[in-house]
Amino acid sequence: MNSAIKAKHQRLILVLVALAALIGAALMATWALRSQASFFYLPADMAADPPEPDRAVRLGGMVESGSIKRAADGVTIQFVVSDNKARIPVNFSGIAPDLFQENSGVVAEGKLRADGTFVADNLLAKHDEKYVPREMKDMTAAQARQTVAETR
Image 1 (cartoon, rainbow, N blue to C red):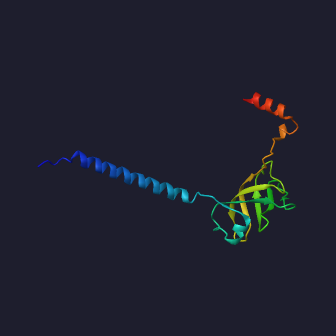
Image 2: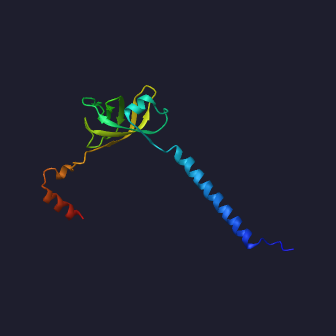
Image 3: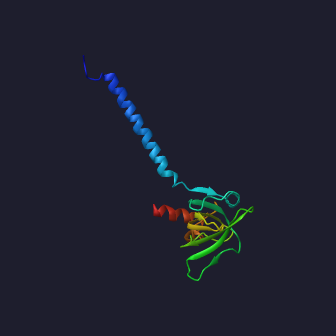
């Protein structure tokens, strides 16, 4: 009697082991990334169904006019994000992007506290499709094209 495994059975075992390893790797990646996923909320969504206090999320909306208040330390900013349905107060400590201003879009990354205040770790300022860098604001279209071509 031949105790060696037939080639057909060896391939079957190899395929099953590879499939099990692939499924295991996919499950481990999914488990590792589940806590890293950052969900996006609008103010109305956050007010209606707030995330768990320790969950990292993104809050997006418009910075309300007159809501930006800077603390004496120079790095702490308080403002309100709104979507015309709900308002969420935000605290941020750090350097705000140059485009961060009232009546402009913002995406704040952070966590919602139990008192309803969103504590942001990072701010992403949004701009409209007509955005032009400060350095190119006073240039004509031809000058801007020339400047871009020179930097390449």
